[in-house]
Amino acid sequence: MTAVLSVTFLVLQAASSPSPQPAQGGGTDVASNLASGLIGAVIGAVLASATSLLLQRNDRLHEQHSAARLIVIELIHSQNILVACQRTKLWIQNQLSRSFWESEGAKVSAALKPEELVIVGKPYLYVQSLESVAATYVLMRNPRGMFHGPQTNPQDDIALLDDAVIACSEAIDFLRKYAGFSDEEFERLQKAASK
Image 1 (cartoon, rainbow, N blue to C red):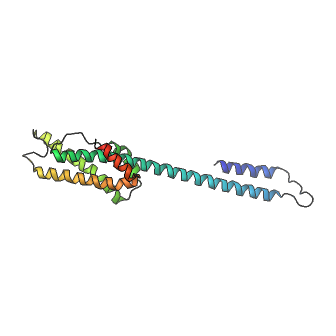
Image 2 (tube, rainbow, N blue to C red):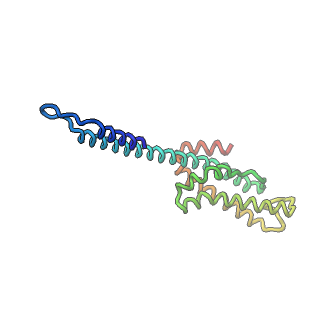
């Protein structure tokens, strides 16, 4: 916009000023000065627009990669809790978080293909299913809790938990590459999350 105003100002200024007389042996031509100024202004506007678009794209990619890193951290945390539930056969309500997925998922999903989005979103669907099953046990007033209910088949609950762990693992494996974690960074992250 600034470039367009500058070009308009130059054109009006050149049109209103008297034409200089060329000097002996050749001089300047107003039309050529005006044309070169106009070309320079157009090139400047194109370069400014291209730079702005490139910076916006880089900012968007940085936001998407940062969001993916947060979601990977959240998935590792969820996977650790789910694995602990597998080992102990105990479910504790409200231990799993979806806050990064809820706040950053839109940024990541904008960069993913539909089949990739399914891979990343599947663990959250399993977590939601597990929480629903656990809530059912609470409603049935089952004192032994999930995985031990006489009203349901505990093997179904355990299979759902196993599927959730697998889905977390697949999502982490896929998303860590997109998030740009090096093998060393990822190993440090897993060690820190398992403490």
